[in-house]
Length: 441
Image 1 (tube, rainbow, N blue to C red):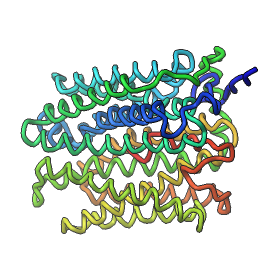
Image 2: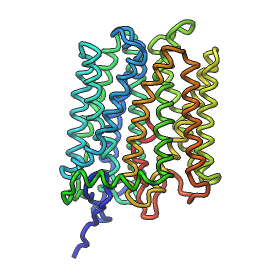
Image 3: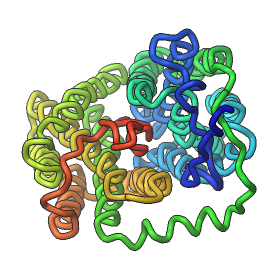
Image 4: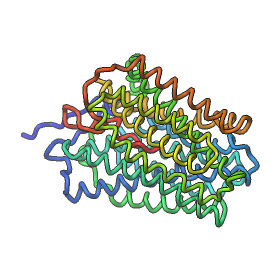
């Protein structure tokens, strides 16, 4: 008699989630495994290409719609806020309706709202559509890790998660790089439309490629209130609270720099065109390097030391952006970006290691803090920028980074188990927080 499948009661939503056993899960190299990797990569592109497509176009949005820099940045903040608030509800629905079906619904809704964004008649409607788009997009990062964990063999899960992370990184970079040149030629609406059309193709790719689920077990019917109750233990742990603070403060600082640096460089004396502002996002490639580098450094020096060093790199890079020469500003941006991705890689992986139970809930709270920082700090920093200039904003962001460092130094253990972010846990499954939207803000 076949052994019954185990049900993980700490899944990302209400009840359990099926875990594919060795006989059911797709193994590395199989046709089903390759289809799943391609489907998750498409989902990552569809999600993050749309989510941040407007970030490099904020100066154009500000001028055309007659709004301030801080108001223009709300097009990013409301989308990330919608995503953060929708993560748990989407997980709850998927526990009952299935991962693929729920992710398919989310990506279709996001594509529809994304195609409507360029047609927004005014700023208020634009914000409404962006909020709805973000809420729909929340169904992808909320469910991707649960889906692959259920459908692939444990030894192959880390590689599958890597494909999704690659998709999110490429999607976010692609959306920004495509929107800028198109907007320079035809306006921000056409730039956004071009990204939305490409995201629609990626969404169709996910729907066509995602293999039929084999490891999903429906929830036992646990209520949403019980799901929220599982978050309480994760909010009482001081080390976990320190990691949530890293997510909020550092992500908020990171998004703020990229939201408003374009405004600074498109004004005199720099006069960058929209396509040149879009190229600033190539600095993200430094984050790809640093996120991998810190894993090895953490083994040697410990997570807390590397986290603090990464935060220090962010602050140093931020200080360099205060200079006037463009070359120094760009060097500072690269260092700042590398520092952020290093810190985020350590913090997100450490969340799973510290949460000995309820890892999915700990990951959800990290996600919530991450995108809440993007929304709240990403908007409020714009008020400082438009009233007092880049120097005042950079100083405030440096204070936030210092607060994050103090929280890490005081509340995080100095001698922790040397488990590298993104490696496998003792059960052979990838640490769950690593399947958040990867190091892709």
